[in-house]
Amino acid sequence: MDLALIVEALSLRTKRCIALCGAGGKTSAMFRLGRALSGGVILSNTAHLALAQCSLADRVYFAAQVEDVPAFKHALPDGLTLITGPVGEKERTRGLSGEVFQQVLGLAVQWKVPFLVEADGARGLPLKAPAAWEPPIPEEADVVMVVAGLSGLGKPLTDAWVYRPEDFGRLANLQPGEPIHEAALARVLVHPEGGRKNIPAGAGKLVLLNQRDAFTMGAAELNGLVRRLLGAFDGVVVASLHGAGADGRPAEIVSFHRPVAGVVLAAGAGERLGKPKQLLPWEGVPLVRRAVESALHAGLDPVIVVCGAYSGEVAGALQGLPVKIVRNDRWQDGQGTSVSAGVRELLKEDRCGGAIFLLADQPFVNQDVIQALVHRHATTLEAVIAPRVKGQRTNPVLFDRRTFSDLGALTGKAGGRQVMDRWPPTFVEWEDERLLIDIDTLDDYQKYQPMG
Image 1 (cartoon, rainbow, N blue to C red):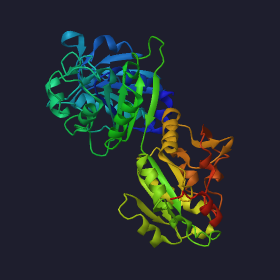
Image 2: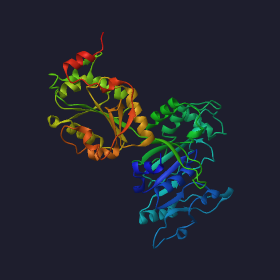
Image 3: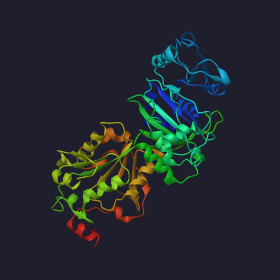
């Protein structure tokens, strides 16, 4: 996956200030991200920056005072402009602060270019815990990327792998020398004194899990780590960033995870069946509850249920489940109105990177196929992803966030199919032919309902 896809998905080119903190390759990440943003970009630091790394920029200015900040009266050149503090001890530049920092920020605002700031140091180690004064994230930051190196997982909690291991152990509930597992790393990253420390209110929060190529644990452990982080962050990037790209090696973006919502369409009157099919019992629970439980077990968040006919009964069938009920007063006009009603609810916030639309009358949709769609989206960011069984497209279907404006304008009976001319689907091949089954008639219900 190209880093430019993440830049587009998060609209990073429009952000005023992006700060990076943590350990495990944040300097590489800053330069890589700067290149992916394209055009003119200003880089800086509020902590120390190794002098050797400064040459990775296209031009460098050392600013000890406001007068040292370049004016660029006619145009800001394309490429990376690094404005850092004067060279101090140990061949490191000092970070900008006070009036000098504000002057550089003003320069970025003047030329309407992204401003990337490295906000702390980790002495080249993969993991860290912040000191009392760290990280010095500027209050102007509207996106903060917290970086952690996966090469530290499985290693002992010592200063060979962790910067400030005593503080890390306190946040992770680990003793010195114990192996660092994914749950411990998640505890540090989500802790208000750890990865979320000093992030300005209202700023977007991302985690970059770097050094994926050095990660020796299985996919299940990595997925578990990502799921723990998504509750506290807006997105998780898994990558292997080697240097800043000066050696020609590409930035390998393995996956990009954002919360994926579930929208269960349950507004119909069941006219062909003669009764509300979403309320038919299936293995002891109503069909609509079965669909919602599959979505929840697969980790979809939030889960929205769009009701129309029998709204009260559907809501009653879902008591005790953490779902949002949305009533579609235009349900009789067709499924498109239910799709748009669900999407309009999702557009009230920026959390979701996509949504999976499920039908209440498909009892053989399980968490496996849902998670397969989510995984495909995280590794490709494709716009529309559907399962395909023996050459036939079927439901549920995942729609990326960039399709939401089209989905929100839908009317009529065709549902999400109306937007697939503009956003052609890609497919996850699926073997279980039962995924093609939906319950439209009483004969269907009697034929497919499990016995006993």
